[in-house]
Length: 236
Ligand SMILES: C[S@@+](CC[C@H](N)C(=O)[O-])C[C@H]1O[C@@H](n2cnc3c(N)ncnc32)[C@H](O)[C@@H]1O
Image (tube, rainbow, N blue to C red; front, side, top):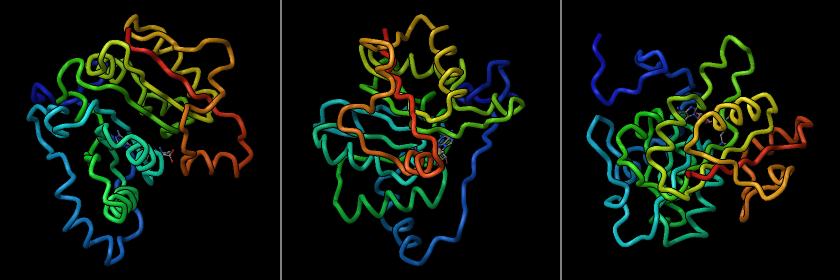
């Protein structure tokens, strides 16, 4: 099959498969209604058309992306604390999407738009230098070596992130899994378009300013993994 020009490819130039979970427990009735009535107003349409972040948020200053927001705790907090900024959230898991849509509805957060498919499919539709920041927080670690290629961080996704971030913008990556931290450092440091933004060694164990712990961070702590890596990579 010949992929469409914008179809996400892996490093070998083949269409990239997606391995995450899209649905879990059935949505309850209220969530079903939010999907029908609220989500369509927030959702970025699927497809191949270019997406211009600036036109998604007229009148706001700057647009920030969060990939794999889970239950949306961090994204909702960011949107609440930075009402002048637009936020795009990408998540595929219906339970997580429902949770954030509910939060947006209850709080009337007007500066969030959602993409409900593989984040890479959105990245390839964004113009060069169109984002002011990006977060990837506690991504699925895929711990087995034979599954490492399923990790979100790859030369392809980093290439796209470097392309869509403005010079000086930060790509923020957090994990409690040391092997994934090393993997990400190794991949990022191989691209000359990012540099590790740390004033001193060990800075990366300090949460970002205005940090909102996520569900997976809490899960890590409950399971005894007390140390996280909070990397900030600056787009050069
Ligand atoms: C381990 S969870 C972490 C969720 C959240 N960031 C947290 O810290 O609680 C990873 C999340 O990323 C989502 N995800 C995985 N791959 C994705 C992709 N390619 N595009 C969008 N979301 C993705 C999963 O559905 C899952 O909810």
